[in-house]
Length: 146
Image (cartoon, rainbow, N blue to C red):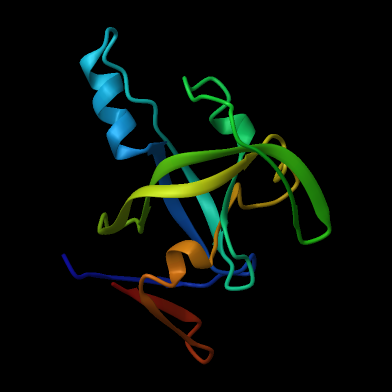
């Protein structure tokens, strides 16, 4: 279903709320087993056209029942971190409630990686290439279409 998100960019850059859950196929498994809980967290993510991948601070998903089978070492900005690749479901959204759901996204989970940052994750090109976006410098409005 096509859609659009529009938001104003503040002093910390293009930040957008992202609802993070296990991938859609894994949500089905979790829902079918007791206690039927699907973990979820909403965090501010930075839209970063220079990052090839999505990254989340692994501390926020550390208690989730995700397998740790694919290690990753990565640098974002001046920081280097180590963690795990996970298939997650991400839904970018604004306070207005509309959102851009992505059912399966490969995300690097790096524990404590964004502890000193206003954002707790990065939306990289592995999602951004699926849509179009525009930034109006005069109004500081960022728009994404899909």
